[in-house]
Image 1 (cartoon, rainbow, N blue to C red):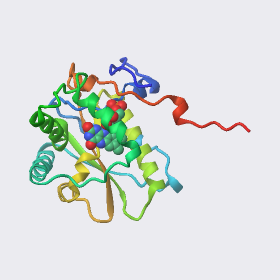
Image 2: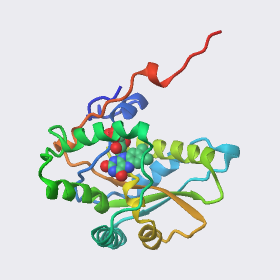
Image 3: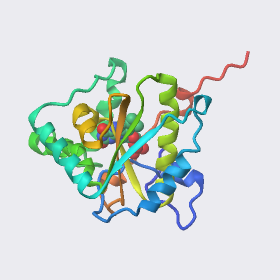
Image 4: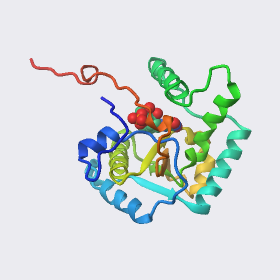
Length: 228
Ligand SMILES: Cc1cc2nc3c(=O)[nH]c(=O)nc-3n(C[C@H](O)[C@H](O)[C@H](O)COP(=O)(O)O)c2cc1C
């Protein structure tokens, strides 16, 4: 079950970090010390992987590198719609429910009729929600689904380590709608598959969108227990 967004301090448990990690979509402009990022990656690389191939790669950008990438993404997103694989039909209701939450009263609070405000909020994806550290998560292009599992474990561990340090993050498939811009901006060659973007920074306190609690399915829907 998702929980509130406030991390008990000063020594949160693993369970606290799991419960209190939420996607953060408003950041302060405060820089993030490299040490905190390296500590978090150092923990994340302890994630398991198939034959210990450790096939996760994370490319992060801050300062002028970040600004350069954000400018290129904003330019591309103003010129052309993103190219992203559509969700299969049976999952679309989740997106629609999440969209109501994000743009509704608990989130951005933008009326359905306010098309321009809606668009502006969506376009915030392409500035990584104002995060001072932006990134892409990649893996070797010769690998397949099972290896993407390992990358997922790396990423969740990374985000939990960030949470423990008071930092916020948001994964962003949206930016992969402009793959060529990401390749150019982050210097990612064709030998790597870009799986997702990520925003990292200090959460803006008291922001309603950051406080949103996104529901989860019941345990019984997730696990099947066979006994005979
Ligand atoms: C692979 C992946 C891609 C995501 N892409 C986006 C995105 O492009 N934009 C966005 O606002 N949130 C994105 N999210 C965040 C999800 O909307 C969020 O994880 C989900 O609604 C659950 O909310 P929570 O992270 O606050 O618990 C993504 C999450 C994952 C795991």
